[in-house]
Length: 93
Ligand SMILES: [Zn+2]
Image (cartoon, rainbow, N blue to C red):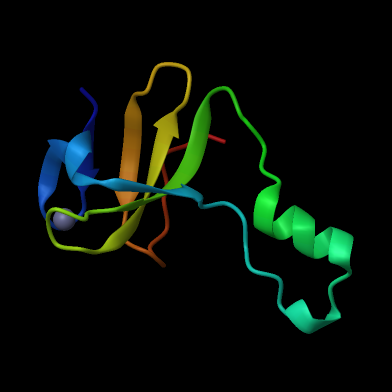
């Protein structure tokens, strides 16, 4: 069982959370100007990294807040978590 540290509630079981996807992808500044291919890439195409990965998680059975987690996709170790907008300084890529 994966334990995920919610910044507000502390470590809880993974079953309390929902995965929100890659947190390293930023919304395009002007979506109206994107080509169809660039929009397709932004919405659907993601890397599948091996190692530290920044992710969005939602504490559905707790505080109902979104936050970011840096998790190693190889070992499933959660390296750090932080609220949106707060810098994550853990030294990993
Ligand atoms: Zn929480």
